Amino acid sequence: MNVVDSSGWIEYLSGGPNAAFFRDPIEDEEALLIPTLSLFEVYRHLLRHLGRDEALNIIAAMRQGTVMDLDDRLALDAAELSIATKLPLADSIMLAAARAHDGLFWTQDADFEGLENVRLKRKP
Image (cartoon, rainbow, N blue to C red; front, side, top):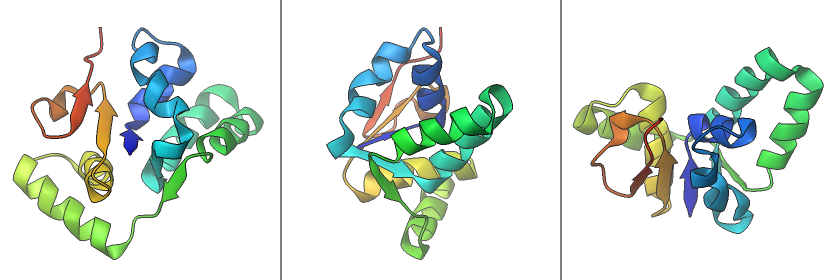
């Protein structure tokens, strides 16, 4: 299973320099997990830059993966992970979501460097 960080989604959608790094996990819809937090962050970004209609179209495509709600177990796991790794709230939720399904977390955020089950490609 794969969880792609919100910045990875935005990079992929905008065709940024790291877009190819995120292509395989995003396009493998059967193995793609979408935390609801990612929907929030990507939708907020798209609303600002593309408008509501285009943002909703893209969110509909994102939802072809399996959407994961933030439930009580995931919230507690993320809190523990945040303490152990010193990651901020959103980052710990995203990584905890991947770990809850023995998945990989794909990001370009250097805060995740060296963490288990993380695939990192730094921003150029």
